[in-house]
Length: 335
Image (cartoon, rainbow, N blue to C red; front, side, top):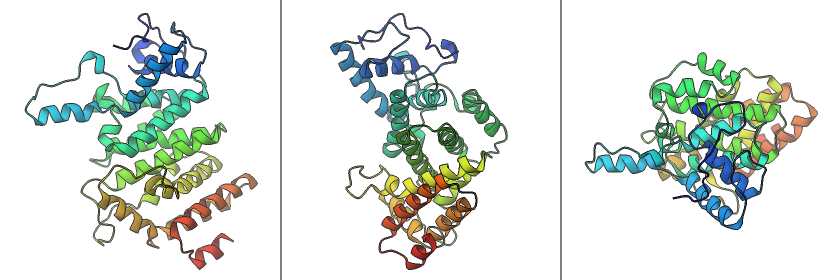
């Protein structure tokens, strides 16, 4: 039992009611306020014991995987196994909700929410990371996401499902819009970089499902990772300067997000090594890697402002390091 959880928890003061809030949002908000000594609308006080309990909750919150837990129980024959009332609530939905209402929450809270999204897509399968099932069923997904932001409502209203990947694609679009909105509002650079990395890993997860690992198979008609990433941003029909910056941020983050940085501090994504190997070769293959990268960077240059020149050079630098040894044609193209 979490002793720091207030018994008389009320709605967070963001203009909504408890009924429309994610189940875990009040608890998440209180824990973050306690940990970071932020002002809070709840009755939780900040003392050493509560901060310790809040820290433990937040670690559990980021990594909770009840979908796997109950799927395992059902596979072992307990076909009626269902989450208890205390286990209810979607980590992903609570973070998404907080990020779409950044004006209400402290920047520390929003950065934690973005880091949680990134952590989950790196460490869990997509169906486990995006744990909407812990709060509402798949048929409700579009309706629940639509109320998060008017622009997201418009995007999902015009969305056409492409089959088995429908849930993943809606998730991709919801994070894409978060990144564009963060760019448009000049959000903290750490927040934008974290969302860009989460978007890159999401595109990779969608591109390489468990049964699609062969990047060299000519019959494989899946859309390349770079195209998945960029199409999710351009489909929002946001102002071109915001879209271009979001694309450049995502392309910059792609190599490190998938394969770890030079020091290896980020580690590898938890996925079948065959998928990572296929992605590695795809991005190093000219037609599906460098050519697409150059194409999107060139498109960004057409409407680039002086501010965007730095983003363009940074994106090129990250790809050059990934492609080492340097492709001379690419170097001349960059110059």
